[in-house]
Amino acid sequence: MSTNLSDSSIVFCKNFDSLSAKEIFDILQLRAKVFIVEQNCAYLDPDDKDKESFHLGIYLDNTLIACSRLLPEGISYKTYCSIGRVCTHLEFRSRKIGIELMNYSLEYIETLFPGVPIKISAQSYLINFYNKFGFEVTGEEYMEDNIPHTAMIKIK
Image (tube, rainbow, N blue to C red; front, side, top):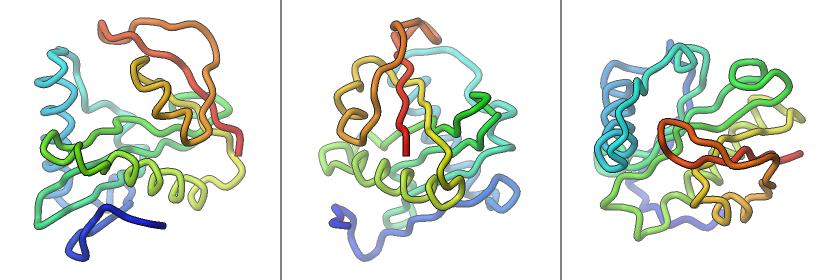
């Protein structure tokens, strides 16, 4: 896989119980910066799904620059696994780190949950981004936390 990451970057994917306190803090801090502060959306980001998920992160020089969570089948959707809380640090978006994050997310989800189709709740303005990874729109647009979202699926 070609990468926009430097040799000093570290990629991890761990279940919740394996995360260090620093990793949990960094993940929650980055998600708060992106989803709550940048998007001006007041909602409770940490939820019980975090405890059931795998968390993927990309560090560069001790700074978490991107993360996502990988949810087993039955947590968000009865017959699908899922990728959620996909976010990239504002200062690194021009480096296409989101593409790297999705490539790693799909690679790990296939290893963790082989053959299970994936369903996501995408912010609607990102439909074209997720199309590039093989996701297709399913259903009508809906509001989630006052932001337009669209369900998308990827059949492996």
